[in-house]
Length: 436
Image 1 (cartoon, rainbow, N blue to C red):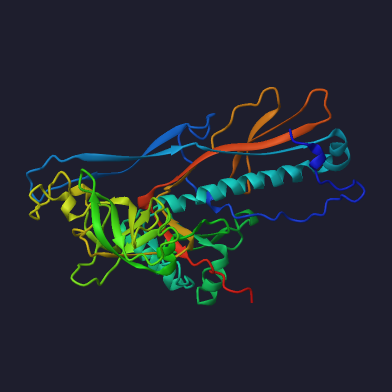
Image 2 (image 1 turned 180 degrees about the vertical axis):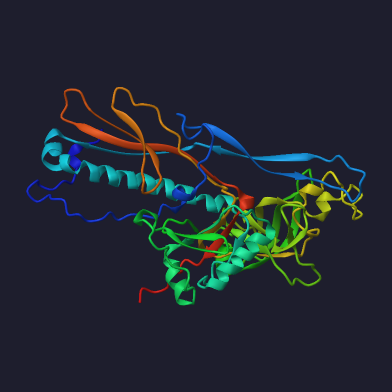
C-alpha cells in the first residue's frame, strides 16, 4: 500500500459533503463498443488471453456457368487482453474514522471514473492504428452538416453494413457544426445524464461526442503540405505493394512521416489515371480515392522518404497472370483493392496533424473487459459502473498489525477496431477556434 501520510485530507470539522457533481469525461466508446463475446466477458481471464472472430469471407468468380473453383478466403481478426490499470488508495485508521468513512462512496466513484478514463482513452487510440481511409486533411475545418454527410457518403461508397453506423466527433466541434445550420444535430430529449455523449441520429448514423479522441501529430510532409512523387515501388512476393519511396520532402531535420499519418494518392496527375479503391465486396471500382496509413516513422534521405503503408495495395499488376498482358488470374481476383496499376510518377499528399474522429459500423469496435480472479484473502467483487459501462474488480483489506487499510479498483481489457469497417475523420487541432 502507499504512504498514507501523502493523503491530502481536510480536517473533519471542515470536511462536509457539498453535493457537487463529478467532473467527468465522455465514455462513448466503452458504452457503444461491441462486448458480445460468448463466454469471454463472463469468464475469468488473464493478460494475454485472446479471442478470434471472423470477418467477411472473400471469393473469386468467373463470367461463365462453368464454375471456376477458386479459393474461399476466410478472414479473421484477433482481440487480445493486453492492457491493465489500477487505482489504489490507503488510509490510516484515524484518517478513515475522522475523514473518509462517510465519504467512501465518493472516493470509490472517483476511482472508477479514473479507471474508465484510462480504458476509454486507450480504446480510442485504436483509431490511429486501425484506420486507413479518412475524410478531411487536418487543415480544413470540418464544421458543417454537409461535410459530415459527405464523409458518410464516402464511407458507404466503399462498402458498409446496415448495422448501426456510429461517428465519434470531438465535443469541441459541436458548436461550430450547430452554428452552420445543423439544427437537428441536438441532444436527444429525455436522455439520462449518464448518456450525455449521445448527440443525435442522421441517415442511420449515431453521432457521439467525445473529449478523449486521440491526436495524430503529423511528420513534416503533412505539416508542410508537401506533394510527394513516387520514385520506386516495392512489391511483396504475391505482388502486393507494401511500401513506396517518394521524392519531394522539403524538410530534412525531422521525421518526414510519423506512424499513424495518413495519405491519399492525388487526382489530376499529368498522364496518370486517377486511382480508386475497389469496393470491398465484389471488387468493383468505387468513387473513393486510394488512401493508406503510414506504419513506420521515417526520416528523409536527400529529399526522399520510404513510406511503409497499410493496407497492402493489390493493383491490376498484382492480380494479373504471370504474362502481365491484362488478363486477371481468377485465383487472385479477390485480392484486388486498387483499380489500375500503380506506377512511378504517381503523387501522394499526407494529412496535417489532427484530432482523429472516426466512423465505424457493423459493431466492429470491440472491447473485452473480462472478470479478474478473487484477490484472496481480501474481500473481492467484480462490478460494472452503470454510468460508463466499465467492468472492474474492487477489493480491500488492511496490513496485519499496521495502521493502514486500502482499497483497489482495477481491470484488464483488450480493444480492436476492424480496419475495413472504419474511417478516420481528421479535425484540425484548432477545431474549437478562439474562446471568444
